[in-house]
Length: 164
Ligand SMILES: [Cu+2]
Image (cartoon, rainbow, N blue to C red):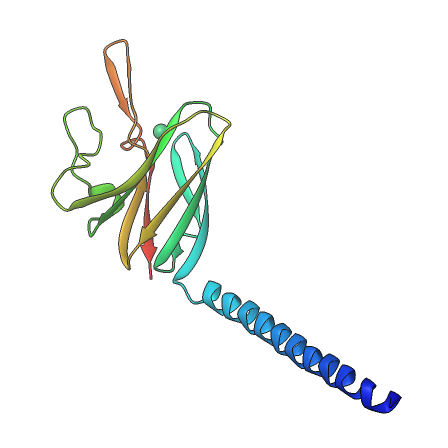
């Protein structure tokens, strides 16, 4: 009698064990699936940019198409900005307006995005989605002092940047 009454109990536990193992396998598969999903997107690149009087120095000077994060540090003593434009023109050949700043709406220029003001000694990030092509990164600030204008672009704050 004892043997008979115990048998259903063992069977019951065994069934629970199978369900438990199956549940763990599903959790395991789900975890693998989410890992694969995270790596399946477009490339991401990080570029460090140093700005000072009078240069804009990205490192490296190229990135892969996709999400690009520019970490811009102003190591100069004046306020600067960081502008990204897509253009086939060389960095020194962009169209300018009267005060010497780049005409960001000018012919042959496609504005992408920008950080407007980066105080001396501070850093800011700009995350953009870039397709393959030629870009120029620049500072488009114009200082006006004692009737004189000093466009940072003309002073050399511009660099070619390639997206592969
Ligand atoms: Cu500047």
